[in-house]
Length: 304
Image (cartoon, rainbow, N blue to C red; front, side, top):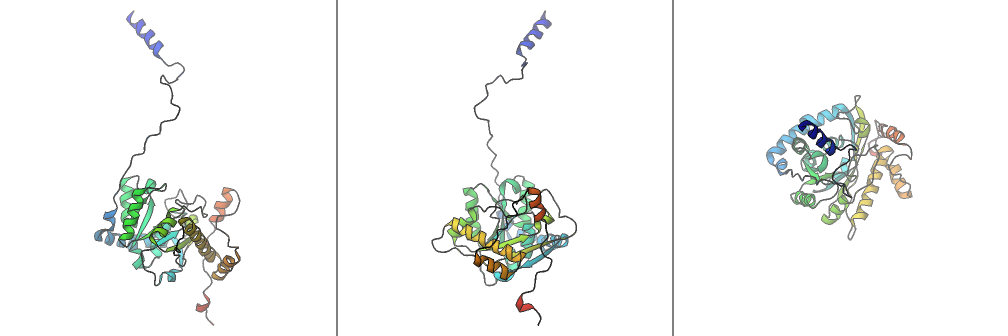
């Protein structure tokens, strides 16, 4: 009888309808994400800076310039500019940071800290260490955070310029997304000039989902615009909008010419590079169109 009693007891306790014996809560349980602190101060020590300069100039830049065909314009806007400043660039690919750091003059590239998404580049220790050493990254909370804000102020106080992406994340289709307000507030609060940078062609060279550039040395373009300084009494939202307009003008100048972008801006017909109102496949296809291989030479450099 012992076996029969055991079977009967099991049958009474078996959940035949597979329903939970505990009443479900009205709200699902969401575990609190574990907070991870990755100190990056070591990446700005003299020893780490020497290693980073060797890695950037001896490895990363030659590799990026070998796998793609970059064209750099507008570095003359940095002449006479004193740091720290904020370099603000559109973001469509993991190639953007190597292309910008590789195109900056050496004096600027050695004193730039790169803001990187804390939930992506700092979610694993090996990734945090490698990116901090190679690119001098520091964590940026894309949803806001006082701890990151304090680190940014510390970097600025030490004389470091910042490379930030006001879109907050990579574009899913290669076109310009909406700007978040953190960069504008940062520039207004600290009186920092922002240098707009338009990177074109990086989405076609290495879009999301790829860990290596596509074969064929895709043409990419990095164009620097004139620095933009906050005006007295200006709000962060107003400066963010002015920065977006400046980046749009730099983008349009790279796609057409300096005169065309200046005229379109004066006439109020400057088109934002947000892509055509079309299905996603068409937008992605248009974003992979390579920039012009050779821009027209400036008038003062043309032969007569």
